[in-house]
Length: 570
Image (tube, rainbow, N blue to C red; front, side, top):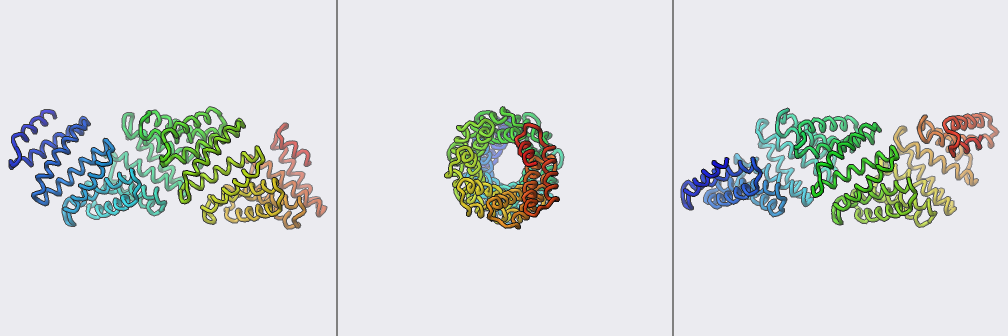
């Protein structure tokens, strides 16, 4: 190869400016230098290729065809240089040159589709760097036009399908339009069919389709989509053995899917594998790697998840250390800083729950507030931040019984509620969380109107929950609890007691053995039935109340605080 380069240099030296063979000599030398760059990766060879193509552009200005080719090729090589060095000026120049080539390749030109594809590729890269949606929209338009020009057998069609699917996926990430993600999946499947086993880019197609299917699962909660994504990631990993630069991506992508499946189905093996893959990905992203922060963050989140399942303090401590390391890589102005602040705050709040060290809760509140400041109205993460800070404040209120904390907590819950339309799953969850806070405020301040407000909120929540939807049982329990509170204050009529009994019965059906809340549901229903037996002198109600308390006792152990409560009730 070095000999070819030397020979082509000699050929160019024999063709000075004005020589009829200079154009061909420039192309030939550029060609062998580019081949050597592909083999050896020396940036100096690529830079010389660019210099030679600039010379070709000067020669090509004498005719339109030659000029369009020179613009196209020079843009292509400068785009490759951008991929290696990430200099924004190179990307802007590649876009400018490729636009110039496209202007010289009108409809009907044989090279128009390829130039459209290249321009779309450069615009997509600039979108990923600068987040200008206009670049992405233009890229999508160009790729659609290119695909119309590519026949089913055209060698560039598979690449354009993959690129269009990726652009639509990016636009879904930015705007959340489900149609974009749905089309991305359809195109991704078509692209995969055109990249059969043995094709050099099959691994990329497998990975991209898997990522889109995971996003579809997060939107639709269809487990078959997530299972397919996991299988595709595993297939991609087979094509990305140790040493493959894309192996860490597949480790991370598969880890995310397994983590999501654990959250959905609770199989601990999925979480353990996600942790192992996350550690493997992190090892391949050493300090200084541009994606190290993502690996640190994902591993930290999974460690916290395992802590919540096993309560192993070392997992939580490691998660905190990893989140702190992530924050160092996400300084002020980083788009994901708020996410890291909020997750670190959650870990510290969990540590407070475990160890009751007030400094951890205070830091959690401070970090949560900082995250909220970075998520102004309209920010997609604002609702999560509002909710998390409210939860941290509730813990401090329970510790200090300070009214300002409780008032702010309720205000934050209401602010989060305003971000979700009626019936939205997140709104239902927030309704369920805000009502106990209102009840706390009644208990603390003794203002009857607060109890009535709590009842209004709790009555609003259950009607939106399907019978077996997670969260319905808590809503039924809270409503029954509020009704009994009003009964105890002699503010209610008998219908309140009947409604409370009905709510507790519903909650009990949603808390089968061995649900952790079954004992409390048994006890509370027994109390309501006992109240009704006193009013009506009803022996069946009293018998049922006794039976319920006896069942609760069978589920408890001696020494459990709830054991004494049920025993006293009997």
